[in-house]
Image 1 (spheres, rainbow over the protein chains, first blue to last red):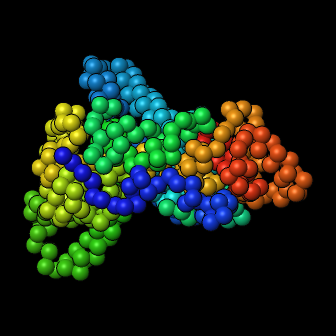
Image 2 (cartoon, rainbow over the protein chains, first blue to last red):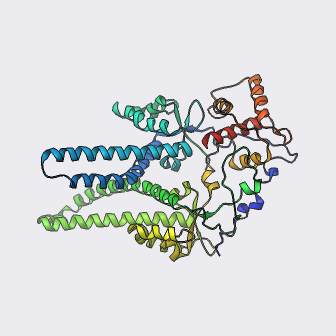
Length: 186
Length: 283
């Protein structure tokens, strides 16, 4: 029968005593979790995280959109009208698949983990400035589409302003009231 | 995946570590080691994440090797001249170079997996989802096991279906590489969730949640309190007066009924309640 390597700190019997978090007199004195008063995330970490996320989203969406595009392409006869229509339809379907995958991916991870895998690797978290919570599905989707479009359309200045902003916030952070931080804890 | 058997070391019906104020579980139960066979969707997601990292480094690698090649071809241009006279030899040369770059890249990929499994028990991707590779004989993973798992990746993932069928068919969700090497991938929701605690640590929160008697949380109070707690404890944009802190303390102590019995002072009770609201807002 299987057994995991024995580690005394993982033994259920060693965990869960209230005395462990209190002092000798039985008084419990909690402090803010170490590394929670997070510093703003560095630009390069955010850049690399976004790159990794982009790759993951395309790894997920390409196997879905590629067969749709191919099917549309093969279904056409040779004449230019249907060909143009097929190209338009396959482009549209690829965008649609991409947006759906983005909605699920960014929404689920931002809501449940506070960060996408790319960000989690660099120990980054995204919080809503006002409510102090993780952001939800639509909030995340808006930030990724509308927010990042706005940051891109002004020649990427929206992203680059994170370098110069006193709290290192990008344009899409300001629009959607988010704060990207680096947590020092592991 | 619910039917997959727990390991010998874990409690038979270890409950999920989920935040809830009225949980009747003892501290022992909610903090037990929950190592079970990893669900297949978590393994696939973890694999995607690993490939996200490898893909990003792959871009960098291809870019660097292109720069290197440009320098090398320039440097050895005299020796390479005869190759480029005919189109065919030039193409063969290019393909040969591309194959070498690909070979180096894939050995880096395998080194990544072997290194992380051997030294950490989990790749960064697996780590994010609380997954860990363990050896069935109870010993730490050996180099032989890690290499064997990597070799069979070409069957499991390369042909796509064998790995998936094997994971779904075996009791411990093992892919063929796992079966050959005598390993399995375990999942612990406690590990997966440990970075989702903001105000106090996971251990402090789970122990206190078990010990304290908590009123059901109203979403209005939760929202209002989180707004205060985040700006006070985390961003430190707000410096409340002691009156304001006491007002919050009385409100919070109304929800955390037996806080006095356990000697929680003002900051402790405020921090615990902030974490409680944060955890409830997440679920």
